Image 1 (cartoon, rainbow, N blue to C red):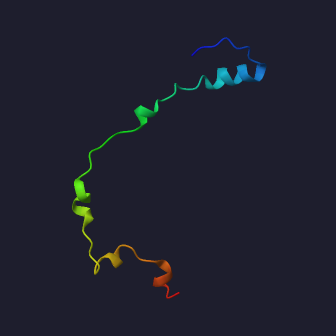
Image 2 (image 1 turned 90 degrees about the vertical axis):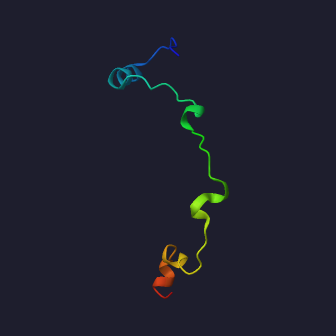
Image 3 (image 1 turned 30 degrees about the horizontal axis):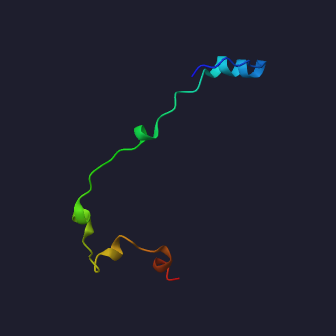
Length: 64
């Protein structure tokens, strides 16, 4: 990706100080495919009596 570009004094100074940008990362290299358990696995169960412990609301806790 080298291009012959005329640089002004400021751009030349920045290039000397910081160097060049790293190469672009392809989108395919940033993502990962993972197999999921059907039906949500062990986390799919619903417990109406115990769920309030984990999903509390500050407004309700304060009595608002």
